[in-house]
Image (cartoon, rainbow, N blue to C red; front, side, top):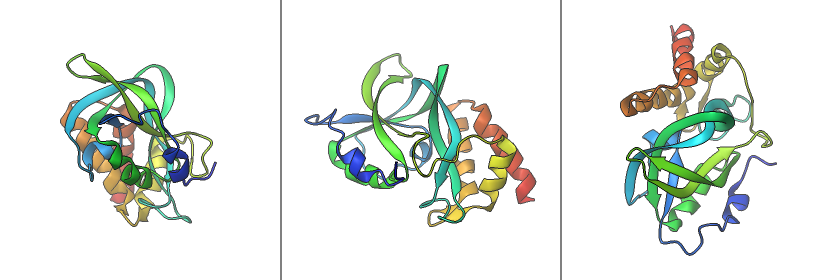
Amino acid sequence: MSHNTIAINGRMDRFDGHDSVWLFGYGSLIFKADFPFLERRPAHIGGWTRRFWQGSHDHRGTETAPGRVVTLVPEDGAVCHGMAYLVTPEEFAHLDYREKNGYLRLATDIRFEDGSAAHGIVYIATHDNAAYLGPASEREIARQIAGARGPSGPNSEYLLALAEALRELGKFDPHVFEIERHLAEFRA
């Protein structure tokens, strides 16, 4: 599958006719909401874990030197914490463009901190997209992040902002924090 997913996401019609839809963010959507929203709430989804396994050729790296950004991979019993935004369907044109580098818009159940739940959408870059980099050790991921830079800035900025946002939410992510720890080796 091409890493440009705008057309594929445009065909997703699960929430057509809805006045608003919950969007779950687990990466930069936690700390960079560059779109209008009606409501914002801490949330989580089950059965997925956050991993720096997706290449970024358009934001935090280039075609020849891709950065690494997060996607979700299935894992039994896992819980991924993040932020949910209630948005109008008009926002999906912007979000589809923002997430075009391999991310598919998928339906998911979102759980909120107060115990309530809603059906919504999450963008996930699966292993079959052209920008997928796949697993590597946290140290190797940190090395790649330390050297990557794209139109949206240094890849390290993305990692550090995500780690800080997770701390502000009071959520521990061993994968993210281990990469952050290793990043210090390559930035010294």
